[in-house]
Image 1 (cartoon, rainbow, N blue to C red):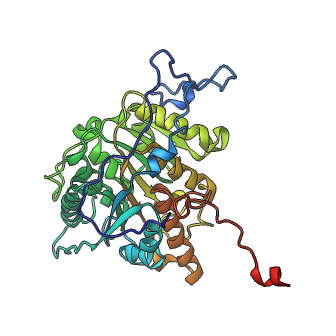
Image 2 (image 1 turned 180 degrees about the vertical axis):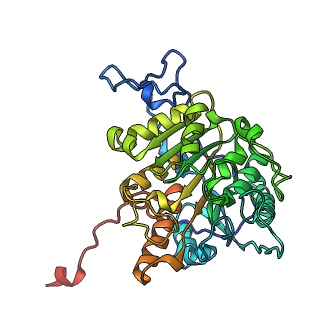
Length: 392
């Protein structure tokens, strides 16, 4: 069988096959401490816990028989935080071979280039929030672009840029898929409100704009009149947290948000973390997944070129396992890859390592496996006889 060639197309693709439903007669059982508990109650892991159904057991043949249509969209934006350079993230991720890597997968690839953002000359802080009008306008533009791409049938890959861009990315996705769920892979919770934020940087506040339960805590910030909350707290799971501000910790506990710190990952293993993540988000119904992946979720030894590195992060294997399992659901509809900052790499090798890791995260989210390729040959070639040796 010929290797599949990726080429531009306008054909709308059908959703990839997803999980079969869990039988209603088989209730899920897992430790109470894995479920976000407003009271802080926890229970030990016991041998009685059994998963009757594993989300990772899928029909891979059915998945691989359908090609995805992937839209890549760059968002070179940095005003959600103070460090310049993150606006160059999309270029360096592409230069690390993103489009070529995706073109080798079973998909069609559309690179829509970069959005062009305008910097507002007069953008005074509101309360302590920095550059609110600039960030709001950029996210409004991004929201429209994401909505159009998802509406056209593409799986959307947004290249940041800082993590404030998730406001627009998730908002635009929700216009087309209002029942989506969100997996947020990050060292930080990014759920501060303007009142709880220690810095006033909007890349630490995007989730607060999305949650319905926090809208009475959100002031009318200039530039964000177009936004509306699109998620409930039960629609969100965090993975990889290890630097959470006091106000954020209160929000996580008070709203009962499901989250996994790095300590949880050490205790449970990444396989169990993903099982509980999918059961939490998908047990009631299958629905589109939005993956928002901050490169600082990884340990700084793997991703040094980023703005807010925190020691003790994900290993390569843990991070790629997360994205492989998300792909295996067949439900990934849009993703963000943010906070690659090439200016902050101490040398060329550090920058290239971070950008290459970003490519691995995106490619594994879209079907690249550590088993190797599965679509290039149809059968093992027969042994060819050596006619010269036969004559001798």
